[in-house]
Length: 175
Image (cartoon, rainbow, N blue to C red; front, side, top):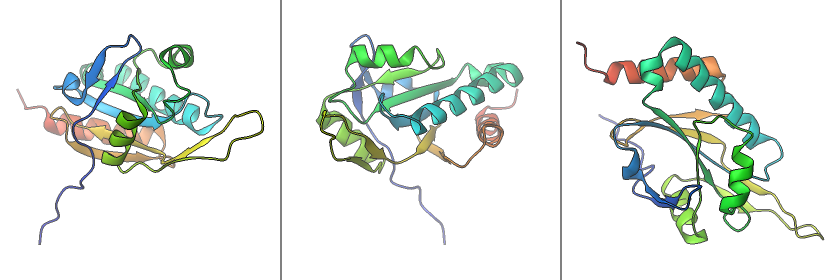
């Protein structure tokens, strides 16, 4: 008996911080670390993004050729508040390699659905503020756009880096 691949991912289109259309095909030939979050997240999103930044820096030091082919993406699950200007401001606090993406509510919902990301807007406070509850997973895609692995919140940066090195090295043809 063989197991199939999970039905996670697929074609998508969003916009980057410059308002340019970006699709899954924009990253052909690159490996992706894809994280869904929101700019007003008080704790979990920033800590997960800093963890990914540590992984990227570790790979740049230990495996620079692999690191050149790895792109971290942040996809907003709160397009109502995460405008391009809000994301540009948010991006200043994180690794410069991150590409921040957003889109219309429909585009974001469609992409989240393809990744089976749980997203739920919490009740608004009197001043109109709210949190967004969402899945906490970093999706790791190979150079062909196929899901290679998922990294959970409990994983340490070293463990994630080891898995990335293992998968990317196995995919590079020996010379």
